[in-house]
Image 1 (cartoon, helix red, strand yellow):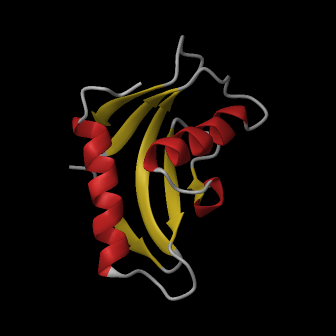
Image 2 (cartoon, rainbow, N blue to C red):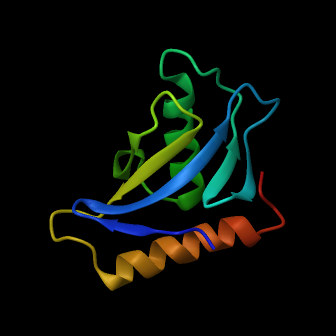
Length: 110
């Protein structure tokens, strides 16, 4: 299971990005991170932007609710899911866990 940690601004989780892949794809877990293959190269922040765009699409959240908070120049990145000014609710935590678990367990990961 992917560890999701509470943060003062929302929830965080790790992703392991493999840039310059032949296609964008979520592969499951890589240690304690969600493994994502991306076609973008790791230059000029392209892989970070594509990572946020790709995750937002499949988590069905606005891109503005996700950001890379650490690992900008690394394959392992810490992603922040912004939960608003009211802090993190149990509902938000459960929702994110369900979304990520469904991505990991889905056989139809594009």
